[in-house]
Amino acid sequence: MVELAIVIVNFNTEKLILDCLESIYKNKPKVSFEIWVVDNCSTDQSVSLIKKHFPNVHLIESDKNLGFAGGNNLALKKASAKNYLLLNSDTLVKSNSLDNLVDFASSSDYGICSCKLVYKNGAFQPNAGELPTFFPMFFWISGLDDILEKVLFIKSYQARDKNYYFDKATVGWVSGSVMLVKDEVIKKIGLLDEAIFMYGEDVEYCFRANKAGFITGWTNSAEIIHIGGGSSTSPKYNQWFGEFKGLIYIYNKLFGTLAMYFIKFMLYSFILVRTLIFLLLGKVSYSKTYAKIFINL
Image 1 (cartoon, rainbow, N blue to C red):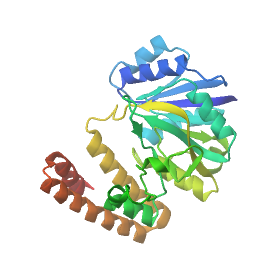
Image 2 (cartoon, one colour; image 1 turned 180 degrees about the vertical axis):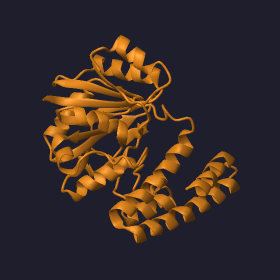
Image 3 (tube, rainbow, N blue to C red; image 1 turned 90 degrees about the vertical axis):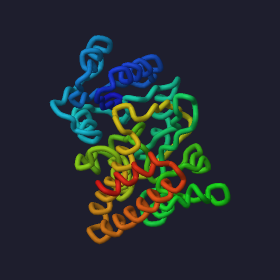
């Protein structure tokens, strides 16, 4: 059994996946590791290029697009490791990051953890938050977390306040773009929920892990570049719509039908408000995106 299995799901990101793999081998960890790439039925040259340039990678070719959860699960069923790192194909690993992340996990009680993410220009990228219980959800959906952040620290569902992020922080959930999961967690609660195609499966998994007695952590001792939106043709719409749809599913699964209808009412209300506010502010593209979400949700 290796110390670390790195799992990457790829869908039509041939340039990004090659850069990601190159960054891993350039900054490879000292611990024993293996890389698993699941190709979600790409139509570009991803598969042939991976085979050509990275023959040591364990490559799984799916005959259909299984989404984030389904793709990762294909590799998680085959790999055997003490730690599993779910890593997006549009990431670049920096020096010592993998070892530092593994060290952080190994030296702590965290069953799931992540690290500092930055954009390509070096700007900080939020990637964690509180579990979506009522108040963190309300602060996020209403926008009060952004409005009051300069005068009041609020623990929100999606934490964008830098004060939330400090070394060895206990958080509710971390993004699946870089998410390390210990083997003991998978053995106890199982794999990712494939009913969520994309967006929200990381939150659901951390929620499920929390209910099983595991905690989730974040560290700034490791840093990884996350470009974002690599496999999406309409990243803003797909992300926001996916997040809202995922939350409705999570509430129905974990809290029941009544809670699901309540959160759905909250989402519809605030989506409508945002549509009107962005229209009044002249941000027409944002207003149209929220309107489209309101219609299709």
